[in-house]
Image (cartoon, rainbow, N blue to C red; front, side):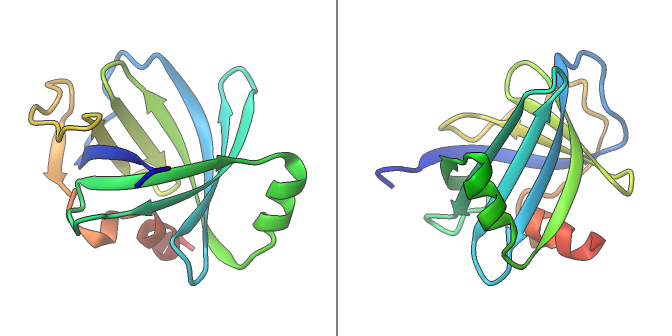
Length: 150
């Protein structure tokens, strides 16, 4: 894991986006067929666009601990890689302080992620109206959601 950043997070289905978002961004994730690779294009509310190639793996099989490697791409690199076969997931991300983000999917589903940095978060923000935790549920990975909504 020399080049990967360890992310410890929990995921929850929630009923509503809580108040207090600091900003939003539009995200298009493209999961490259037959790989563990994801292309991400993120457009911030001020119009800034960031494109990157990422890989997420579970070093010990634990869905809450993810080794994430990122490479930032220019437009030509993005165009070349975006031509590969895959499925896309489009979402609006609501960013909050303290490692909380809520993704609003095209079908209206709301998926919250609580990031604990290098330690698994133990507390659920009280502002979240949680339906259920889906951290270990493979149906709620980005690639699975993209395939389901395609």
